[in-house]
Length: 389
Image (spheres, rainbow, N blue to C red):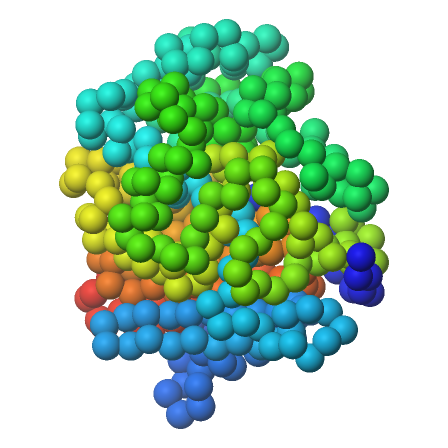
């Protein structure tokens, strides 16, 4: 197992939109200097300079397609970041899950106002919120008050836990049970509170409604129809198929270890998808372009409520994030044990920016990633286009 020394002191796993709360209100202006060479490469280099082992980005807009990479695919080597590299997208998975739920809503097979108890009787209860009062909408919107399960997952919280349990398989029922043992979360319909348990429950509901697994529904409804050849739902497999860079994390210490191998069953519905920067851009383009959802369901997806800071809002598995040039964009960041990504798309669906980095990086890594997405989407939007708030 490779070891590296990092100055990074902190652990981020599956935190998704909650991470925005740490970085959304600061950072340089999005105004680009048209005279500088290859601005995307310069931004990728800037992310690498914050301490990430490897970085890759891809941006698209009408008539434009650009990619850039920096760093290495494996610590201590000169192997470059692989073209079309695959990585664990973490909480960007939530957009996939919400899309499947909304497709089922559009088919009349379930409703956003259905309670958790209707589909999963007896699963949510105890000292926390009651399944009879929590709706599917609240799960997808993170307003359920259901506790977070991540502190209960040993492999995500310490080097020893990772070594001991990186191949452990969890069932969704087991994960929800672990979460419900924790203290009660915030009351439903009062505050926004990010919890990966919400999306584990959503995956369970998809299984109850369809009679098929979350993995199968995501494959058949999104991955295969869109031809996302670099995207997969790995189930309990700890491997990343195809070309990929290694992931590293320090678990809050000064010593990082290789954490590329991981059974992602603890992240079913919430963070398990493996993808590429190219595929993520295609997915968000298809989603905002109306290829995956009918207009009524797409409107539900993008109807947002306030998250706790600086103009950030959250829909159903999709964040609405301020642009420094004015207006907002949609997208979702994601992190899962040494892989982190930030994906954004203009409101009209015409332009995307996706970046991912390996390792914890440094204190400025997440902000530098957000800045890249912000600058690229600001630069892609002509005046009056894709910038409406």
